[in-house]
Amino acid sequence: MSVIHRSWLGMPVWSFGVPIAAFAVLVLALALPLGWMLLPLTAIALIGAVLVGVHHAEVIAVRVGEPFGTLTLALAVTIIEVALIGSITLSGTPAAATLARDTVFATVMIVCNGVVGLCLLLGAIRHHVLVFRVEGTSQALSVLVALTTITLVLPTLTTTTPGPTYSPAQLAFAGVMSLLLYGVFVFVQAVRHRDYFLPLGFEVDAHHAVPSARVALASLGLLLVALVAVVGLAKILAPTIEAGVEAASAPPAVVGVAIALLILLPETISALRAAVRNRMQTSLNLALGSALATIGLTVPTVAVLSVLVGIPLELGLPHKETALLAVTLLLSTITLAGGSSTVLHGAVHLVVFGAFLVVEIVP
Image (cartoon, rainbow, N blue to C red; front, side, top):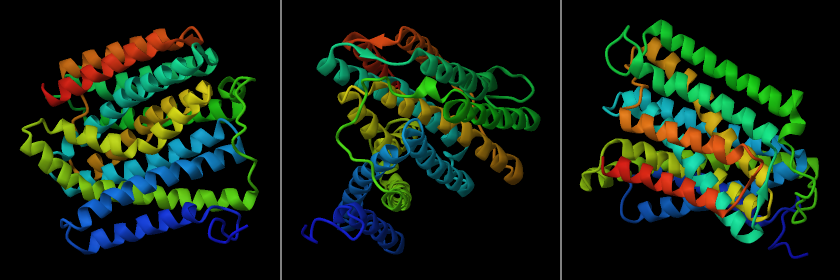
């Protein structure tokens, strides 16, 4: 076999060359101003890091099996996303107080309507009827309802502090409960009731041979490098996005939407590929797991930063966003309650996603 196409570990050369190149572009972008030459290079490196990250996530998923494969990608992306949100929160910019709320809300809407809608639509176009395990989706949705209510709805309704904020005691409770509930979900998904989240019997993936442990470990390391590059490059591109938002006279919340869209790209591509292959359980594990991980890890982190550093933190959603969140949770429950879905379910979710984008851009 030609050395041009394969490395020492039997992996394609591009699979380890692209993450390293993307990380090098990240270092270069941190050292130099983002001029007209470096800006497109940064964008290309970001796309390349996303695509190669999806490849390594799939290698790990084939090696460790479900639901550990999707859990690995969701946790890796979310941990780095939390680091990004935390660093921006500490910067003390005007948008820092609402960035966590805007990003978490955007993530839930993108995942539950955009990603799930596209997966249902594309999968149903090809396979007509998609089936999945109600036991797993119902448990994920129950946790999602509880977490979104505690973190995004209740702060607007409390009276101890003015505005959509929690008091320090309330914020500590929300952070601890978010982390605890997400930890219980991971335990149920990975240990106690793992069978609820396993792919159905026909969901076999013949596209990959089981990689060796050495290849899987190499893919894990390269996945982390790729994800660091994705989040770092996204952060570097954030000022350009903010400038574009200001030039278009769009609301500041659009920045959170744009950041969430960029960071969710690896999980979105993996979920779509699984749905097209009629592996809807894997697709839903990844989508819903991403939303839960974002809330379960982001809220405790920003709560600790808010208390320790004294940064104000607005978590409560305005009324129209609360209405969209309620519709999303109700629609998700209806869609995933029967264990099967058609192209109509995907179309409905995408319409709600379109409404979310319109309301965010043109409030």
